[in-house]
Length: 340
Image (cartoon, rainbow, N blue to C red; front, side):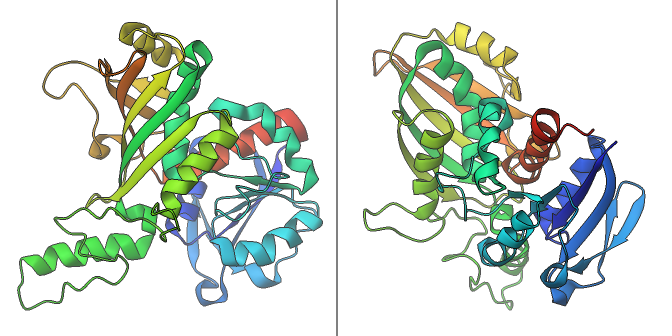
């Protein structure tokens, strides 16, 4: 016996990836409803070898459905997620709306799957920010061994994190640079993204950090350990898909780089590709379409007593969004609903 599953936002980048991954992982779906806004009503989307037409999110009745994967942004989520939850459908939300709500678990299944039992307070589970998700997959097994004190992270985030408009803007600006008669003025981003990097993701906050940087701090604390200190600089780069992170970690105890490498090789969700030679590391191009969080460039930091550096890369549309949501659905099914 399988589940009655809803995917809300099925026509967007993340929604389509959710459908692909549900099919790829053979999630036990008895019935599937795909929802979109009225302007996309009737649009066809693929699920395995099936083609489905989208229904209207605004009028959909969630009664009798087991779980709904939301990929519609904070605005529509605020309106429709409580309605789905009140109808008895467990919401797995990809927006930032519920991530910091103490009554909503924030889940990365490789890291804190047991926290899922807290879903019953609101019938909602939150999916973390894309940049946080891949980082905590790499950090948690090391924290279990040597206890992390502080993390300094610089991100190199692809334009797909800003949605279809971000990807289109990089494509259009890149073409325009080779055609001087074309307009390259930024619309989605604050500055030109083609052949450039922008140290600005989301809005600025009072302390000078951006909201994206704040998210990484708050979410790492909620998912792993509230005592970990985190400082982040988040940068948008001209890459279509795949987020990269340079992560510096300070531990309570000494952790040798070879032991760290061995720990990460055995850790769920991690793939260590770390050879000290040309091409002995992973870049965003190679991670696209993969489930894993790739870890390279593991080495001691000689400037502090118990420090390591590493390079962490993942497909942000997958582990950073759609894959993590489907993994949450799998945990929900196996630990709580127990139908499949």
